[in-house]
Length: 260
Ligand code: PEP
Image (cartoon, rainbow, N blue to C red; front, side, top):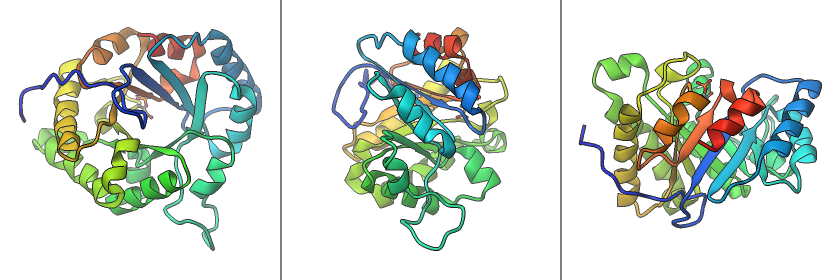
């Protein structure tokens, strides 16, 4: 893999060259009405929206209305953790991007490794989800990342580029309005984060591919990010913020990451 390249690139967020960081929480399948009330209230009260910083939470579908009620008028955005690969129809149990957008969402995570691994989502399906999310006015947070086996085989580059190409093929130049999250599977929920240098190496690779496509995209790192390691990661030139799982469930920790 090439040496890390310092592009000094700014965060995308669908805009061009707005320097800053985006931190997105992924609650996964956690929460209850009472717990969410407390967490959302603490986030709203504690988020000072420092210049160049953006914060969002991606919550389970049944809680979208609650996030909307608690965060409307605040500087915190909200979104979902998945969208259907279908626009609508006889797909029992699925939730469409247009339904999600009705709850005032900004973001939708697509292609999280848990969905790829546990629910068999293909690269093609992830691309379709990204397209439908964008069609509905959402910003897809597209996740890519290699397993430990991939890494040990020296396939990290091939895997993340394959996953990215599938999205590029379907989104085309609209990829410039997406957010990309590099989440090494071996670092998710394991307490074992990539070092800043390991993360930067992959982010640099993704940046070069997106540059070649003419797309200025925010690149988030995800995988066991905590307040104690966020700063080192976020200082890397091609890391524009984080996708945060476990640590997004504690307001103090999540806010500390977002201001790291
Ligand atoms: C995630 O679920 O996207 C994630 C990064 O989880 P964690 O921060 O818990 O590793």
